[in-house]
Amino acid sequence: QRLEADLLKYPGMLADETVVWRAWLATHQNQYDRFDYNIRLGPDQHPGPGFLPQVVRAHILNAKLRIDVAAWRGVDNSKLPAEIESPGEVYALFPGAVVEIIEVKRRATASTIGEIVSYYHAWAVEFPNNPLPALRIVCAGYSTTILSAVRANSIVLDPIEVSFSILRNTPGGPPSVPPQGSPSFP
Image (tube, rainbow, N blue to C red; front, side):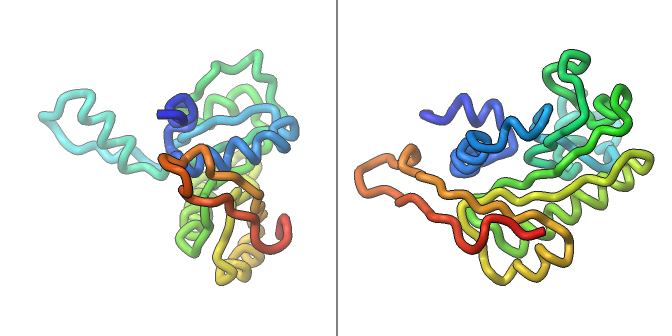
């Protein structure tokens, strides 16, 4: 419950991921114009006739890919709503906006690479007339087996030192996790 506000603000993230994200934001937030969370990509997959509208909406959303963070540069927030349903809303006003897709993990693994590369390709299909997104993984730690895939896919790996003490229910809970490796990979 201590992180309830963060879980509502960053609805696609787990509690430990919100701790990682908040630590990263503390030093990088001013490098971007806007952050959008829980962005869905991919075609609508309707469940068929006979379902209540809220069931149809839930099915459509659950069938799509879900991006943790879309970090934008080249936008004016005063001309955009606080929350968007689709990046198309941003591109309608700022077609040259540059976006960075950010996946947040406590520990990045091979599955993280699969997720973020899938997001990249879905974004390119959905928004073919706009600049391609950059990719970033923000994490507290990572498996060194992903480094070649990180480099091959031009993903920035951004480990950050994080204290998970806020997640402790009792004394002696999980310790903080220092980052592994160098701060980023081009």
